[in-house]
Length: 68
Length: 135
Image (cartoon, rainbow over all chains, first blue to last red):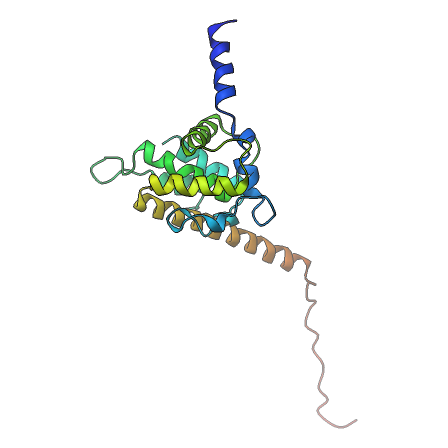
């Protein structure tokens, strides 16, 4: 197996992707059983208006910041 | 000038008067998971964002099978031990608020336009002749 494929395999098995982690999915279930309770996030890191964001806006905002 | 998520991000990423970046990349990346987690992210993750989230999950000790409550606890503990830059955090929070307000404003304006179109168009004002004397 080529070296690159080995690296990719190792990366995927040791560091699960965002979807596998389920972080976004769980956070989107806010208010329902099993979701991350954002209200339990500490004050310095909680953003009052974030739950009201449109997801397309989150993508545009985050994607631009990610290239900082 | 139109306020967009991109323009707000550019504003946060602007340099100071001496041309020096106000926040380094690591500081900005450190707060990104908070936006993603609290704001949600649509399907089809940007590879760079995916990497940032993977790194975050690894650093915070978050695993796929962890319960939501355990995840929340891990997130709090991670940021307690690695607090974000308070000025950057404040700017990001204000930026998020500005994005929400812009969206609400645009939707309200659209709603008003739709409502105005659907409302009955008033016809011409009919003038009623007022008799000047008794019939």
